[in-house]
Length: 166
View 1: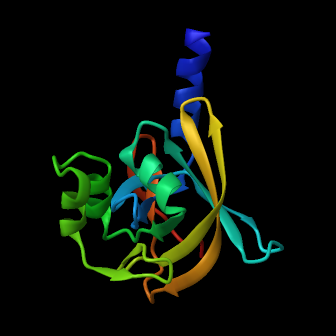
View 2: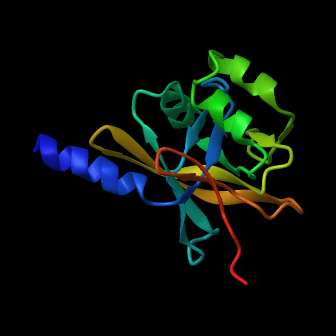
């Protein structure tokens, strides 16, 4: 099984994914984490819905579960430093991570990143544990779009640029 796990991790590293910083705030505290697993679920729910997957040991998981809200901030290609901070690679811990950027407050009370390509401010509707990760499904309470169009991409264990087709 170890070889299959290693091959699986290598295969998944070949997928190109957008990068998000998932944030939350409320009675469970302010927290955030970088993720590359965010996708739409449905527009046919009471409000459009999306999911994020977060390692269960991340402090953001307990905060999201308690606050019952999260915001998926889709990063632009110029925001790699923000990704690094929330991934824990700069040494910043807890709320210190938020010092790397400017924030607004969304309808749910979550931090909304200024300049994000899009910010999906959600109320938590499903919390599912699968192995080491939690899948959080949220329904939109607010949506912010910027004029920026170039996403930060994670591919082959590093950042990459999306190149538009001509």
